[in-house]
Amino acid sequence: MQAQKIIVIHPGSLYLRIGRASDLNPTTILHAIGKRRRKNLKSNEDFIYSDNLLPPLVAGEAQESVMAQFNENSLHAAHSIQAHVAQYEDRQGGLKRLRMAPQKVASFNKNSTPQVISDDGLRAQEEGKESEFIFNSSILSLNAQEASAYNIHFPLRRGELNIHSGIGGSLTSILSDLESIWSYAIEKHMNIPRKQLNQYGAVLVISDIYNRSILRELVTLLLQCLGFRACFLLQDHVAATFGAGLGYACVVDVGDQKCSISCVEDGVSHPDTRVRLGYGGGDVTQVFLTLLQKIIFLIKNAIDAALVMSLKENMCHLNLEICETQEKSFEVEKPPKRFLYTFHLLNITGKQRLVRLQLPSSQQPDSQDCFDAEYIRETGRVRSGRGDQILEGSMPVTCDAGDDELVVVDAFDVDERVVNPRNVDKDEQLYYFTNNGEVVSLDLAIVRSIERCTSDDMKRKMYGCILLVGGASKLPGFSKWLEQKITLQLAANTVHNRSTEQSALFDVNVCVKEMDAAMIAWKGAAIMSCLESAPELWIFGKEWKKYGLRILREKATFIW
Image (cartoon, rainbow, N blue to C red; front, side):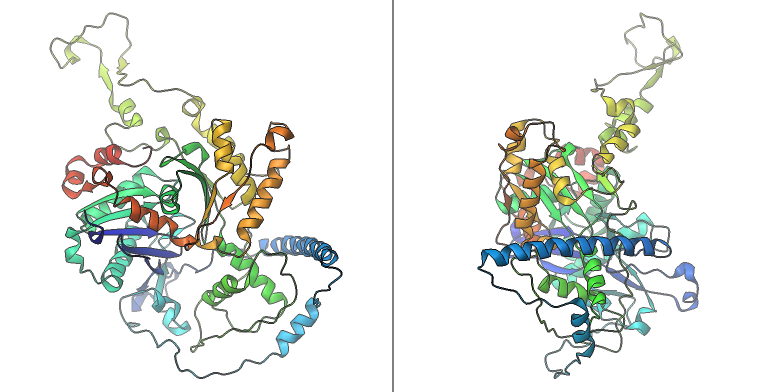
């Protein structure tokens, strides 16, 4: 299949990246849809729902404890930074930096007045506000009055389908939203009529931690609902290694609402090393907003989340060599009143933050998969009496049997997960929690993921090639900071059962490619779809209709 006839789709919690495999860069749009509410149901709260651009908020009594914890942590961080600044000044021969008390900064911001600039070149008002569905920038440009007429849905949250109890939260509704968003992107931004999709193949980049039943629905969406000629699925971490040109790596994907980690070697993501942490760049934006509010931020009305995210991307960094009071200015395009949202501090390290691990196949049964282990156990029972033997010439029963006899089709390796899977899963999840019940930090999660590799040689390779991808990883100085933190974790004997001399053998190297970190996985999927071996991976519509999940099991690029 030619590269011009292949469409690569990489959906995320915040953005959708889509484009032809022959394109240099993908088209990036907001991965959300706005649906107009019915006029007779606008006052009924059961039919009103809107997902926030930033992660969910902490409200009620928990807010006070969160703010107390936040103030304590921010004070500790400020003291650490001041100590570093003092050491830096000593190294620079006593050169003092510009320091200013937070009260003076707040007073300066309070007395600042915005300068009105010409509206030449500002973005024109979005069209299509009266349509039944709105997408991309039309959602962000809604004012308060217009927003009251729409339900806003983000199909993906925290790296998985956004299934909830509200309106539009069912699996069928979410799949319908995905179909609408992807169709809009293909028709409006790629200029491909939907009726011509039967001439194209689709490569869907999926999460490294997946649910097999959801994958079946996604393939059905691509081949039967959207009408692609063929498709195949590719894990995002495997795609990232292809995009970076690496044969092996510990891939760290820092997205807007999650951080995922896994060790990849020769195009295979090892299941035991996969972990997804329930925090990301959106949580950093929440903290950034709270710090801005402490110094009386210039904007006093309801703040646009997109503006705060832009300020974070342009002004935040992790370079301790740049640590002083600086004056910054920025432009704000202000329509009647922005619709996104009133913010509060998010509880980043609270107990409600989740850790996701890859479940073994024995815990993901699917009745449509005839080779599924659970399906075989449930359907492989035959009566042992003479009259119940269907096939003539079958081997007679030569031993005492009960009423039922289990037909063993395959010899499965029995381990602790099969004997008592629920308890083992809880223990594995606790591996990524601290003693206080909080989710571990990113650097410690990386170390614990690599430590689950089977050999020291594999661990050495992974420590030496930690690939940093994802849109939230583009903060200046982030890679250097992460490398230092991982090195400190290796030096601590509290994490490993090895001596300091053995830990010193592992060299830590965090790799950052020159291309946009948010596009590496998409680029890798585009490259892989054009390889000579790619024709063996395609699942065609007729095959899917005839064989169903069996063909996906046989042609999947990952361990099913």
